[in-house]
Length: 297
Image 1 (cartoon, rainbow, N blue to C red):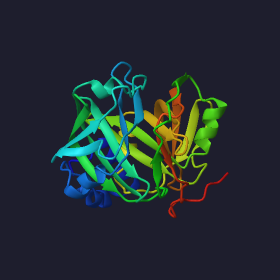
Image 2: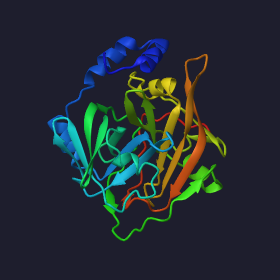
Image 3: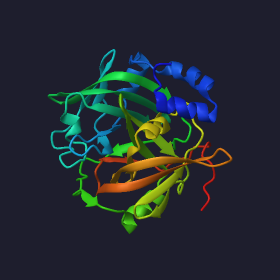
């Protein structure tokens, strides 16, 4: 199955799920099918991930717009309209303007608990950027919290981004109350963004520069952990679904295996940026996924 690289294959073999991964991997393709194109045009939010060209650090960022700001503009091309004033201080601003950038994207709709990932190479356009797809696929709704509706607050003004060398008390509370975050990773041939969800408290802060989370059973592809096996650089993105505040972390992540087969990911923070009211979206309260394991507090 050509969609998997050596890192993913190694983990599939370690866990004993190569056959299942081959079956699930048939969903990996390059074409944006009509149902996927229709899904994209309904979304007000897109998460993107890449390595910043200046530092090489991996970041995940959130882009928002009126439905239609993300759409398929060809059988293997997705186009994104960005406000010229957006992202001027975002760690990925330069990457989103650099031709050939390996970029991972995920569109997640809490209303329907559906998600779609599209990874490829970026090309700047007059209105934003386009991505030529290398991989297009959907995942199951497992661990996605349902949020029935959202509203766009046109009078919400983004605050000044605050760079952090380590996590503040406020950032720790933000992380430990989260039920969702996004994880950007890279490998020699591309980039990827995945979703991580669970009950509040599933992410634990060990110290101002270290946090951990359990790696719940998923689709057996091991795309994210496979990337981390070959390149530990990673970017985390936490959203406040009510206030629009965004917390971005960059650093390195490593997977730890226990004797009973459980997996934990340990992330070391190298840099962080917190931006109040960064997104104009306010979502309704979550209905937690029935798949979420209980959180030990």
